[in-house]
Length: 210
Image (cartoon, rainbow, N blue to C red):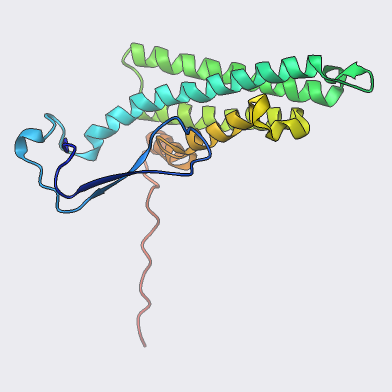
């Protein structure tokens, strides 16, 4: 249904005190005895399965956000390691720093390829909900690792907003959980792979009284 703004019983309040994606205005929506006429019903939509088709497409779009964030953090860290010196040499000269930087780059490259593959599947009409969910879940997981490594590479400066890595660190956290958490997206893919839905736990059996 489409619920018109200002409908009696509809209340939307801005979510405050977010640590990330602060430019995005999210709100709590409360519906209490809201009447929606038949003409405001979306044509061809009869169940959550119909609306979940939109989620598959949006998950592909969301999957590209952590790719961009991770690429930006990698670029920032590479420049930082080359410019900042310690003991008379650039931080880029230390073995551990190079290893972390290479791991970040590997994640970025892999994330990019998964995102590219998702888009190709979508263009050809072959993308499934499982494809989209796996891509979103896996990409955000790898991005989380990449940005975490970037924060480590900057040391104490990694928690300062001046160096942007801290901002990226905060922005990635809500991306990791919106449009379906990592766990839910994994279960969507698992259902498609196995044919078994594992979303609901087994019902508890009441003990018979003696």
